[in-house]
Length: 253
Image (cartoon, rainbow, N blue to C red; front, side):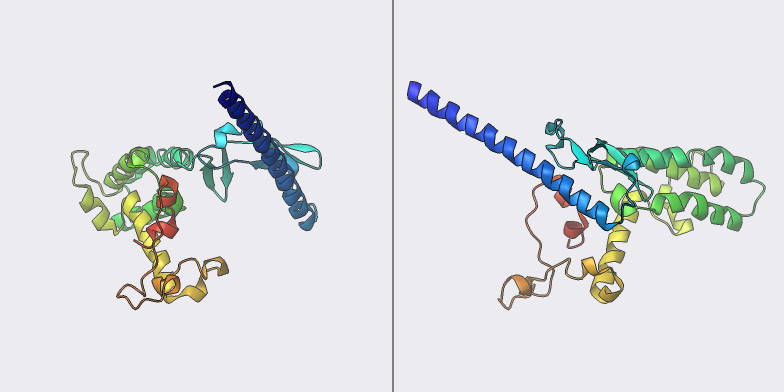
């Protein structure tokens, strides 16, 4: 028994040592990689405005990780804004949903005041200019979350549609609200954007960025059997919820 305990302790110390060296190597590698990119960009990277996030299910275990560029410590954040989209380290998109919600909620009182003074066509133009534009921007990402996170945004969206269409608050048939404006709720708008991407990938791949040229693989590339599904996209087994939410997985279904 004492020999077994000694062996376990030795293995445990080896695991700690290996984890320490891997962490140190990764730290120096990422610092070197960002420094090379910084020099390549001719020093145009503003280090005072630079931050980073660590993604993944175990990112909170790396609290001791620190990143330096030119001896300057880079701030680690749980959420950052990039091209108008708030990206959180958990990829739950709750911060961006709250951001869009706070932007749209101010239009409830504005639309209430003007809906009786403007014709329906002008109200429809205002809706698509100030409401639908915010909802649809980045919908392929931010709607890739649970229905609970999207619920308050959907409720606000329904309310705004009732206001611009001059419907009573007792009007609960939401499908009519979307049909009259030829639009969709957040979840269906998310699926529609994926369908548009897949249509462009199949029929107009040359119009997409080069990074998507070999984004999907067909079954005939994976195996040489003459099956009925040989021209279908190959679906890999995905276990994580983040992986199942990616367009690389959803687009094949």
